[in-house]
Length: 381
Image (tube, rainbow, N blue to C red; front, top):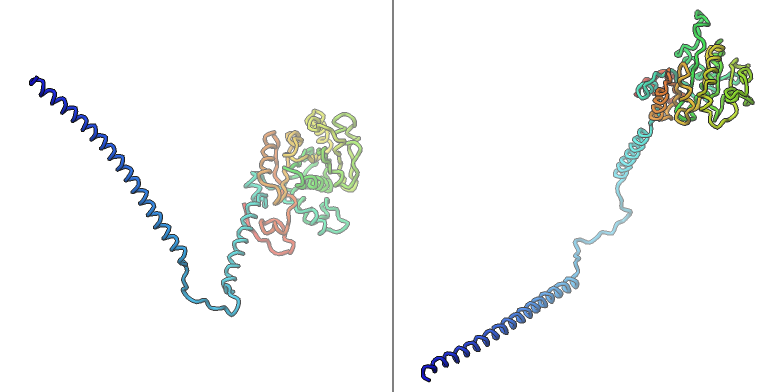
């Protein structure tokens, strides 16, 4: 019994220590929980105090006006504004800026061809002629003058004379008639409205007036205008009727008695004129006309509009490319010239048409100023 008594005591004491340790752990957990609650309450309190202080400061700021008087304002006795010198300076600056902008815009929009130097530089062709506006020539000529004749038309007739001389189409007195004959000259342009048909009629009338046998063929079957410029009605039969076999050459040939020019009108409209223009009948017609006449003038549609001119270009001895002065963009003219060359057309040069003589005299030597003053040479290229 005595030997077991110490073990029992130790067991009881161990159980007591275990109970005390468990109570201590529970107390420690309770303590930590209370500590966390106290820390959370302290944080909430601090936040509440901080928010209260911020609110008090904002209220104090709202109640205190943020304005203070620096100096008292003086009552003006009259209108107040910038001085005249300042306004004049501002107006000069604004006007200068507007003028500069307008000049830049005009410079950017000037894409046309303005001189023979630009013809050679931009288009790569010799400038064989500069033809003024026919309306200006008509006003400067007498009322009974024919603007398509070398005896009238003023500047226009002189320009056509120079064109013929540069193209060697005018026969000199010492030259036999057989030396220069049977040449086919085709006139075309990039777009419509460049004065191509007017120049073709004037060129034909001028050559006929100098004694050459000339025939002009209206190859623009879509918009024929040769008969209208010659002052006559449209003949019942023309080129298309001849090429389709509905008429003979003698039936479609008409003589303009006033200008001594033979004319072949366009004929009746057809759906696909390019087929007729590229036929063997057209080639045979040109061969026969070259045997009968010294010069055969072909008035063709614009190159960039339809393909008719490209079909006829290889059949002509030379092509005159008409470019409207200051109006036709150099890019359009270059594109048309490139197409003519690609099909084998022999371009003899470019003609600046519908030139304003007064403005052109300030750009390039070669046009007589209407005022009769000396020329002013200003090359732009």
